[in-house]
Length: 483
Image (tube, rainbow, N blue to C red; front, side, top):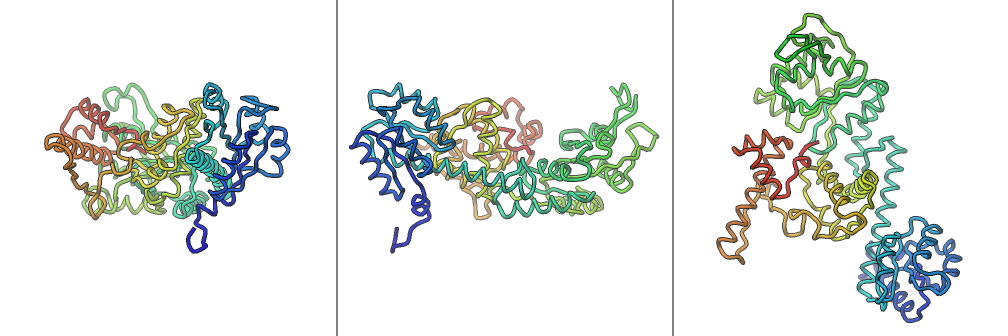
């Protein structure tokens, strides 16, 4: 506090209530004094009976409880408190010689266990962490409810003004049959947006078909799009419908459209204008009623100027453009999405979601996230698997997310500047700098190629096995670079 004005943190703490259950006069007084100095309201009860009677009146934000109360103790006490105060975080205290009970308490749902006599610094850190997690959980529930009420997008969460404008665009265009072009970096959620448009359209009961145009050669892509007749090419043993036919009456999502050849672009333009085509090797004209939503992380206007993308197709697709901001431009969503992905992954794998320390949360909020939302989701899944029910701190973050470890950028935010640690012997310093350059080089190539390993290895002039080995060495995951 300065000049009598409370900081936002002090204001937050002043509105928080802690209920302390402890029959020890010294430890109860110490906890009360320490937490009040932090600006929190504190109530102390010497027995479980008295505490349970006070719960409705005090409505605590956190309960700090001894597991050695005379009238109700141990794990049974935790069970009763969780039943009577669902969702309120619990911190248990035990005698220093009884850590076996402490381990059982963690398994029973306590967020942390402290030993008595209490250390003021440990108490403050534990309480701050628990209440920050509780606030985060409340924020997540509130935003989920707001997004559901306002937009009906159960799989897309945000409190970013830019993304909320995207939601308004989705609502507006979903009611029409207009062609939509979704633009944004790899991993920003372009397919989620396309599905949201489909689910709010009159076509929602019909198929939604998605195809990654960058995953096929030109010949195979034409067959995937338009189908083929028996004998039209080697291996075509019968007639096969393409995705335009499969999506008839519904929506076709064409992902990575910038990867298509000029020949395929000609055929796409014809279908968009006439809604009819011929299967590969066929003579019959097939008519469809398919809505097109296209997406790309490429700059189509730049590609058009260079003759790599047809201008007439660009204009035909660009009826209703939707621009998705990268995650680094919506940092307010990172804590929210992190908690959401941790809960989702924990539910999927039948594990407990880990908690994120405030320091780690601050570090990932300031990270640039080259793989965007997809990268964050993958990382959260990894944390759930390796840290179920535990705590993720700075040390558990990937190296390039840790403070002081991120690769510095030039004034344009694009070119890495080489840093050399002069405290090391020359040979070690050069080896470390070389590794930094190599990692950044591979990161750039993976980003450019959307995580496609064959194309990345070819561009780097190395084998796919060598690429995979180096990616493993540098903690790079191809999934983080895909949408």
